[in-house]
Length: 104
Image (cartoon, rainbow, N blue to C red; front, top):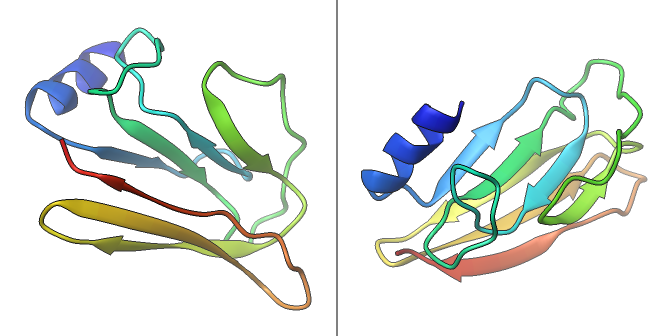
């Protein structure tokens, strides 16, 4: 995925969404080598939509928020110069992750 990540970054992407793992995790902006950088891509893993949730593995570099016990969805609001995110848990769960960032 390193080449794909590099290409997305070079093309000006800001966000990458992945869903294979049945967890929720948000990463700081990072480059194709997994190094935190302000001009990198922010990654989300969102596999909390219905299949059985899985246990979290080890804490990955640049992980900012993670959870594997609550079903829910990620709401993204996209603007021309910024974006925001909100994890919306299925009630009665209360886990949330809310934030925003500017586009590069």
